[in-house]
Length: 373
Image (cartoon, one colour):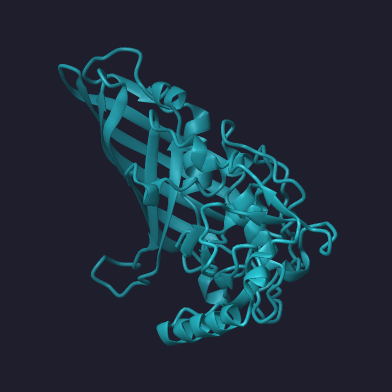
């Protein structure tokens, strides 16, 4: 059985699948970091792991894991004598997928400095932004009249600026969300363009600005630099269109782009040539309600109707606090925490393993974990 999943929630959550990942991860020895390919038994015994992504190396890793699997007895694979815990998978953010709200698929990427025909970084990042039904209703104008304007409530425009318009750039998906207080400006307006029976068309315009002081304390394994940036942020202009069906009380089309510049360092480290201003672009389209796209947003703890406590998970880059206010981040000159030594509390010998009825008992589990990229 093969599984690919987003990493942030698994590393910081307390759901059964999060605990399963954390159990598997604690056993790894050969590679740093949390991303990678992990092969494990359904009972959570790690067979092999690596951060390699080249096809030949992954094939070699699969063979290594398969050989380790075949060396185990059925009892060792399933560990029936161990204290298995049957848990109903509940409390997952995905369980609150807003079918009657609005889900936006966000894609961000670096832009060339002059025009789109220039050479550019082809890496892109993808993640999701959720709004429930009540939040969608709060986006709508008080009167259905051509030319009527309405401004998104501050909490929704702030969500877009802080959780979607991120300074990922060349850095993989570890870039932190901005805190609510980091949002200097977030103004997004919807203007009624036309009305046709129950169908209303909108134009979307806006602009945002974020700036925070959580400059990076290190650059990968490179020496510290004295002139590391003190701030990071994103300034962007927004343009788009949307269609709302008053009969169905939902958006049937929503397209939006944001273009601007990111600047500064990053919590996980950026090289000096990446500290200046760089063009960046974002696209927003409606997500498809398919299992492959019913992924939780990247920072579910920042949604009032999704937030859940993460138990005793204590990872160095676990994101902002539940209110988006409490996580100060490292200060200039501080040594960054060691990700590998920030682990779950508890007695390893007495830890309970999880049993998933959905996993095939006669085959190993292949897990691929990473951030939204």
